[in-house]
Image 1 (cartoon, helix red, strand yellow):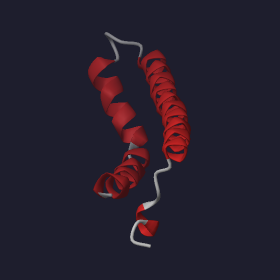
Image 2 (image 1 turned 180 degrees about the horizontal axis):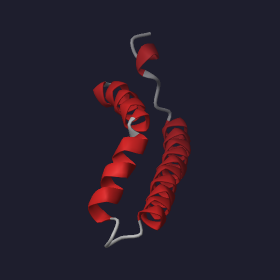
Image 3 (image 1 turned 180 degrees about the vertical axis):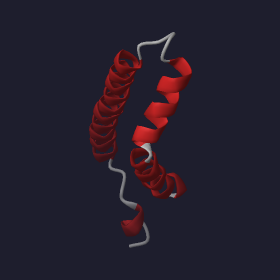
Length: 81
């Protein structure tokens, strides 16, 4: 719960300061690295990571639901009935 509340908050401020962060990185590493290419590659990696986690989560949720249904596991809210 805490992470779910903190991550959007941090992302908002990082997106707000995106240009300043890029400018500072360009000033520090501009001569040694192609920061435009680095930023594109980093964006691709983050998108792939999120998409992969989403796919794995959906698959695990479906498999868990099917196994629990097949075993006959009752939900916690109905366990006392």
